[in-house]
Image (tube, rainbow, N blue to C red; front, side, top):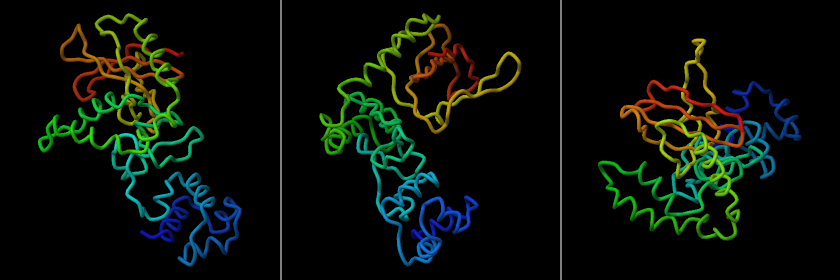
Length: 255
């Protein structure tokens, strides 16, 4: 799809006239008309405004001319839903949501990232050894790891993760092993629905947000495991069966 078609489709989906779109972008209606006729393409600053207004990446606005991959883990970014956001909510097209969350890089150790990726990439076609070898060759070539000294936050994010870990372990929940690590988890993958004592069903997470969490064995019940989610506002602990079935909320604590 060309840029002209993308802008036209997004404008109509938003229910805006050319005049209304022009007003929001501080341009003339004629400029919008020329974009949609394919006579011109918005400049860089206007593309940024369009990206914010329509909540799509600039790559999508341009008709997806580039094949984006995360510059931390190498994951193909084939969908805007996988692309990370900066602290101000704008898209950061260099990273996936798992590696860069709301302006913070979530990995400072390449080996830790490899361990997480291996669990998700092993399949009938690729063995663990093949995946690990592939990642060890790929990751050092990506921009984040090549510029790690420049981009890293001097361990501040790791200190925050350790603070979360200490707070979770201090809860001393029966049957839950000691938490050692927290990984980046996108809300839509872990936003389980819990039944309250009132009978109402509720979700606590934002599908589009990235959290820190992990899954742990349940030492008291073989067919259930613990799920942990943490961010700056709360700690959440739950249990569930395989594939997130029959979730039960154990604790939701404001920080």
